[in-house]
Image (cartoon, rainbow, N blue to C red; front, top):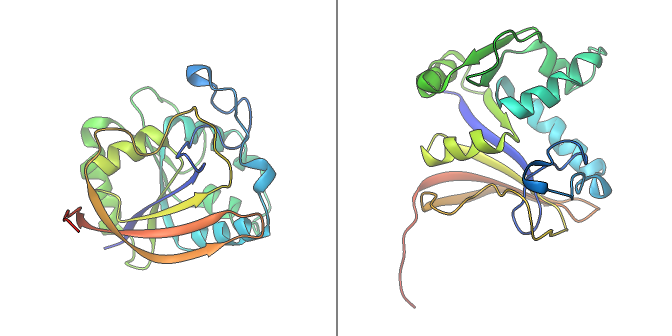
Amino acid sequence: MAKLTLTTFLTLDGVMQAPGGPAEDPGGGFEYGGWLVPFADDGMAQFMIEVFDRVGAFLLGRRTYDIFAGYWPQVTDPADPIAGRLNGLPKYVASTTLADPQWAGTTVIDGEHLQSEIVRVKDALPADRELQVHGSGMLAQWLLARDLVDEMNLLVFPVYLGAGRRLFPRGGLPTACELTDSRTTAAGTAIHTYRRTGRASFGTF
């Protein structure tokens, strides 16, 4: 069965909100949108190309879908390693309000059928492909709470903000992972890939 993977950008204090620009998501009065931009470099770009090389389909939250749909369909170069896949491969959107998506290849899934549809899509993909989630904070938290994320790519940028929505909220499931890959870019971004191994265990020294 294919893996469901989550790729997300984080600050040192775990914030994932609005990495790409001030207008991306000002929800909750967030004033620091675009915090990733000063650290974007070739190492980050190369890693993301490697991630997109493994994709078989995308699963996105509504906000991330809207951001992607407003930009990537305009990138028409078929040789672009990211646009070519986003525009050409199936996209599944978790939403109860999106009624008429215009981006080709989009299927809307409501919350009631989301888990069963994830299983169906993973079963249909080749074992060496991934059902990929990018960003999509609320969806990512929903998936993590149900043990549906098989692997995480966490790109941790050398900045902390003290405000903003975080990937791991209070009340999440205690979960253990193993590190399967790690690298650091020239700009100081630490990229870690973790595979879920089960419930966290505890002990005493």
